Image 1 (cartoon, rainbow, N blue to C red):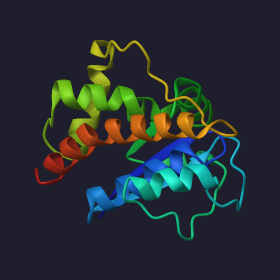
Image 2: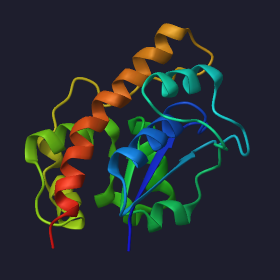
Image 3: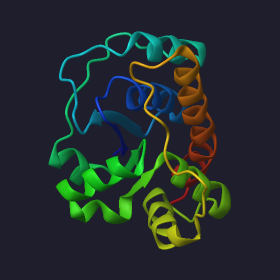
Length: 178
């Protein structure tokens, strides 16, 4: 049985697909990573600039199609990672039961670096939720680069990439726990 991770942003054409396409291969077997947008632009390909940034970071945008966030996506996910706090709020409005499994990308990365693995994958996510108040960041959000400059796209991609490093490390260690 795989551990499911849902990444959420606005249109599901920039930040969340970039995170999805980096996170899945970095985590490898045993993980199912998907993405959606709170205002998902159903069927759209990745934004061209976001796709270029994804390729720069070693990912592949081929075959990606955007989709809108559905309640069941959030209900079924073992972990929900959002681009910013407004997306986290939107996830919780749809699925309040996801409260202890929904974090911004930066928030989870901060907690992962601070707390480390805490047993199994699910135990680790529960511990992160329990210690959420200890995450004191200046900025929990990754700015939306849509229709903005190449520089803004690069900044968003680099922020996502940076957040994924401690996330991947903690989740991989936790996946080896029984």
